Length: 96
Image 1 (cartoon, rainbow, N blue to C red):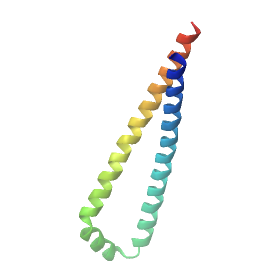
Image 2 (image 1 turned 45 degrees about the horizontal axis):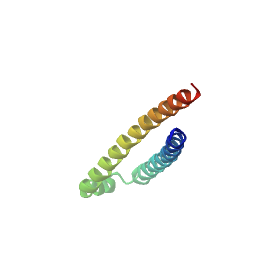
Image 3 (image 1 turned 90 degrees about the horizontal axis):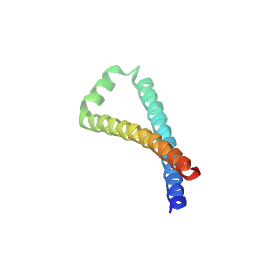
Image 4 (image 1 turned 180 degrees about the horizontal axis):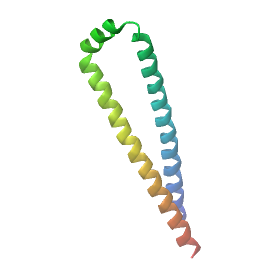
């Protein structure tokens, strides 16, 4: 039973580490999209203002989606820390 529990913890940790990597990629792509948007509208300030005003609900949705993703990302980081501690405790308990 103990060995199975260790394997489950390892698999879950690997899954969360992969998830963390995917989140980091997503955040980087969002950063690049934001830079491209700023550069595109820097010469068209009036048009950019009109577009931003017209798409206020969509922009608010995107902002909330980004904040939710940041919240989940921080929760995943805490899960990774807890899993590492639990795995370390489990390994030390088995050695004793």
